[in-house]
Image (cartoon, rainbow, N blue to C red; front, side, top):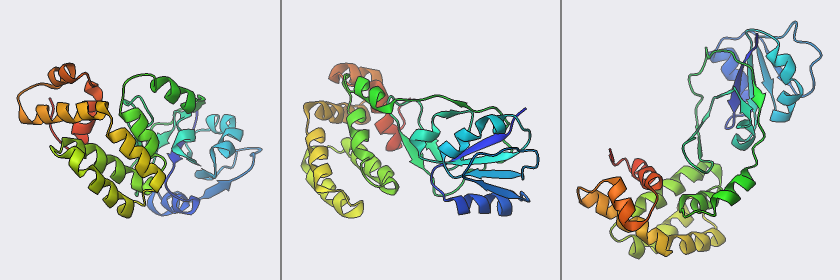
Length: 246
């Protein structure tokens, strides 16, 4: 006995309310910024301005049937609501680091099965600190990507990682960084950090492994064993570049 909870990270409360009334044809929408005393006469949709607003009313939401609840917040906080359905973002759960993409449009998620929402607190800083002890380019790289405005993160990630397939990756790096400085507003401090990361010996090994994979009949496992790089991270770069690897 519960309601369906949808998670919203990239749209305003007004846009969500419009989705509920116009697209989903829910007759009433309640905007919630404080604890509710009862949901006996709850409208068809409840829009929470923040995760904190939802948490104050979670037990009440879990106790009623057949309603639509929309919770707004950052992806980092929304990930702690287990049982909710992301409505305008996707998360790659196979990555060791937090990697998500905000979507400009709502996903067609109406009609999802109602289920109770539980809260799981995630210490992302502690998780990242532990992961940084292992050899990886993605962990440090994605940390730098999240320092730019969210609408530019996918472009920055895709352009720089797929450039690892360029035989002249090293020679073209400065030009790529200069273009990104203009196109995504890459700040000077981030340019320096990106340059330091992308000129390390480990990144050079990734470049060599990727080039050997696309120019020979070697498998991902073979080139990774040869160059001592992560098979997962090689596959991740290949998927961004839309290169088949299996």
